[in-house]
Amino acid sequence: MLREEVYAILAARRGQFVSGQDLSDQLRVSRAAVWKAVEALRRTGCTVEARTGLGYRLVDEGDGLTAQRIAACLGTPRDNIHVLDSVESTNDTCKLLAARGASDGTVVIADRQTAGKGRLGRRFISPAGQGLYLSVLWRPDCPPEALLPLTALAAVAAARAVERLGGKAPGIKWPNDLVLEGRKVCGILTELSVEAESDHVAYVIAGIGINCRQQRADFPEELQSIAGSLDMALETRVPRAALAAALIRELDELRSRVLFAPHLWWEEYRARCLTVGKRVQIVLRDARQEADALDVDESFGLVVRYDNGLTETVRSGEVSVRGLYGYI
Ligand code: BTN
Image 1 (tube, rainbow, N blue to C red):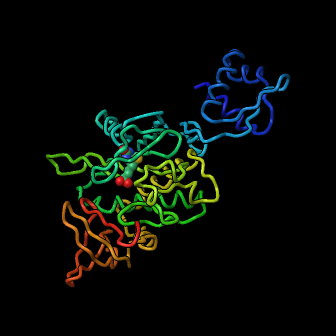
Image 2: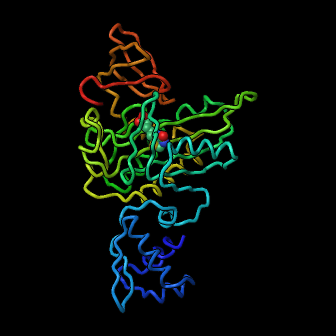
């Protein structure tokens, strides 16, 4: 796309003016086309200064989320990252791609989701320009049980990406909500398709939603004491394209090294897990029971002790764990 080619040249010569003629020669398009591409770039949030006789200069790259910017942050070209303006749900788009044969490692990112999905049938509010909504499709050759730790491991991947760029270590509310300053900044929804005949996984999708730019008043009233964003919690502003690239790197690492050796990230998960040691309420459909959260076992289940003395390990599928004193 011409807009991104213009961006690449201006970004490579950051701070310097590049003449319209120079751009049109390099890109083999008319100067009018260059001007249109600069206008399109501005619409993505970039500040581009234009001066007669000097040309164009990139002043601020804004927070645009495009395949080229993500690739520039990744440093290696990849043809399986799809960046879209608006979708119902990146998990659902991934499923469509999976049905058409998309390969292991395909990533779908959207600037906005109109029907973002959360765990346990909830919705995930996903306004344009405010968050990172990313799903990755994998095709591991294994039975479904082998992927039990995935939802927790995806939380570690997301926490690492946020920490690398934001400088603060997110905690994890079991099983996989990222928490900064006591508020949920990220949710994860994993979905699985199993081949009926072989009882093996056909594909798995890990969908990660990170609130980036929101302020308290941007969330619906009922979520304002619970939900947060990176901007609310961090001193630095983490650009969404850089965050997407960092997250893709961590997910690559998870897929290639950790998925079938989950113990590699187990200690880190436990260290980040904020639920252990807390008084919680275990909600399974309509039944609620209070308990003490004791530990996380080696398959990332939460070990709890009920008030009658019985201990149980709860798994993430259908259970919701609520803090009794606040969100965690
Ligand atoms: C939760 O907190 O309940 C899980 C939220 C998961 C949201 C992400 S955003 C990207 C992907 N697409 C979706 O529709 N949901 C996940």
